[in-house]
Length: 382
Image 1: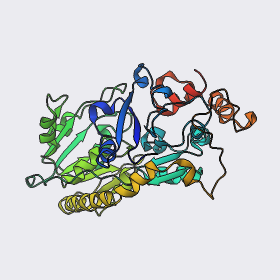
Image 2: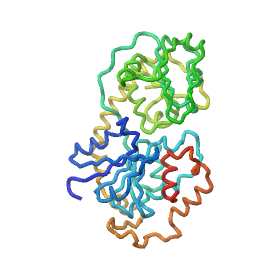
Image 3: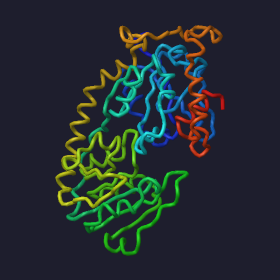
Image 4: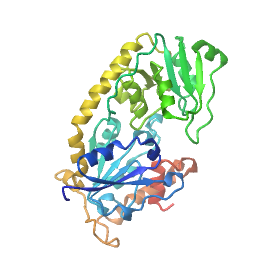
C-alpha cells in the first residue's frame, strides 16, 4: 500500500442525514488519505453497494452496513476489510435471543473496529482481530446555567422500548418545575401514549412533535438539567453524550452503551428498564457537572488514541493474525471461480442456512431493515 491509502467507506444511508458517523472519514482525510463514501440504501428498498465498486480500494470500511463479496469470507476477497458494528443492531438488551456465531463467521480473518466494550468482548471471543476505542464528541462551551429546580427533557422515540409510563415511574417521588416531551417516534414504531392530565399539571409538561430547525430543538433541550435517554440501547450514543457535554444529568437504562459511559451516582443515573423505580434527583447539579468533566477527559483520551486507530485501519488483516490463528488469505486478484481455501463442508453459509431455518426471526419481513437480517438474506440469496 502506498503512503496515501484509497479507502472505501460504506455506510448506512440514514447517517447521510444525521452525519453522526462523519467523524471517522474526517480523521482519515486529515491523515492524508483519500476516502470515498458509498451509501447503502438497501434497508429501505434501494440498491446495496456492489462489491465491484469498492474492491479496488486499499481499505474497505463497512460501518454497520454490508457490502458482500462472492466468497464465503471477506479475507478471501480483500486483504484489508474493517467492519464497524453498532451495539444496538443486536438487541442484546432483550437478553440472549439467538446464537451469533454464524453472523461473525464471515469476518474471521478480517478486522472489527468497536465503539463498545461489550462488542469488543464479543468479537475477540470469536477470535476476530479487533480494536476498541471509546468515542467522545468535540468539547463545546458550556451552555448558560439552567434556572433553579428540576427541568426534564425526554424524546419519546420508541413507545415499546421506553414509553412515558417508564419515565413516570422514575420521577414518581419528585416534582419537576418543567418537563418537555418531544413526541417524534422512529419510523415503524407505535404512536406514543401521552401523559395524563394529572402528570401534565404536576410536572408542568410541554410537548412538541416537530421543529423546523434543529437549533430550535437544541434550545428546548438546553433548558433542561435532567436528560432522559430515549432508547433502551445505543450504538455509540451521540445524543446522550451531547447531553453530558451540556452538563445535564443523564438518566438512562442500565444497558450499553449508556452504562459504558455513565457511572451511577457519579456522573449520571442508571435504572433497570425491566423494573423501573423512583430515582433520587436531589444531587443533579453535581452529577451534571461530573458528566461534563467526564466528556472533557474522554475527548482528550479519544484524541490521544487517534494514531492507534488509524494504524489499525491501515494495517492489512493478515498481519494482525500472525502467530495467532491460521487463516487462508486468498489474494484479492484471484479469479472468482478459483477453488475455495476452505472445505465446502466447513462453509459458514451452510450453517447460516440451517440457523435461519431454525429461527423465524430471520425470516420476518418486519425486521428486514435489521443489518443482521440483511446479511443473512444476502448470504442465502433471499
